[in-house]
Amino acid sequence: MEITSVASFIDYYEKIRARTNKIIEIVPPEHIDFSYKPGKFTIGDQIRHIAAIERYMYGETISGRESAYPGCGRELADGYENIVVFFNEKHHQTLEIIQGLSDQDLNRKCLTPGNNPISIWKWLRAMVEHEIHHRAELYIYLNLLDIKTPQIFGFSAEEVQDLSVKL
Image (cartoon, rainbow, N blue to C red; front, side, top):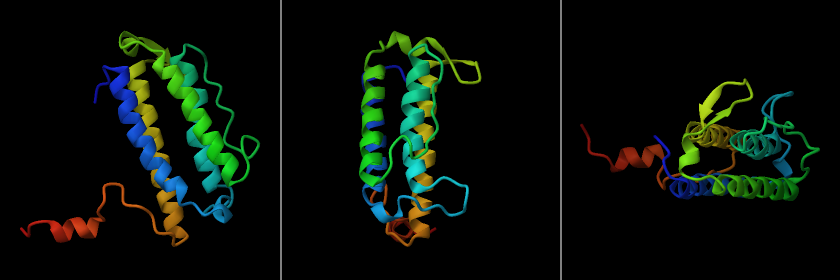
């Protein structure tokens, strides 16, 4: 997928974010510090990570600055409500940066944290893929806790199978 329009990208990205918000909304606050294994990201870490990477790595680099990713620890936001506020604030800040781009800017190069040049449109695509990756991890975490998760497109795999023609 090639991104050629800032406006159409923002529309698409907001739909991705809406699906991520759906999963975050069902996280029980008492499980925000759950991790499947000691030393691995907690649910709160996952949410802070999506927000901090979006704003401080992607937002900074598409602005022509170096990545300033601070990690995803509790010092950024602690407790369910504060994490959600942090998540939304960083997203709005990143959207402001993206809205400041022209369609022509999408072809301009920026530097990744590894100092590799990449077209901004490709870097934005990577940002979306990154969010989807961590959203999938949130689904797994919640499934481990036996918390019913929303279907992304309305049907479970079993329901799609039932609705499909039999070959």
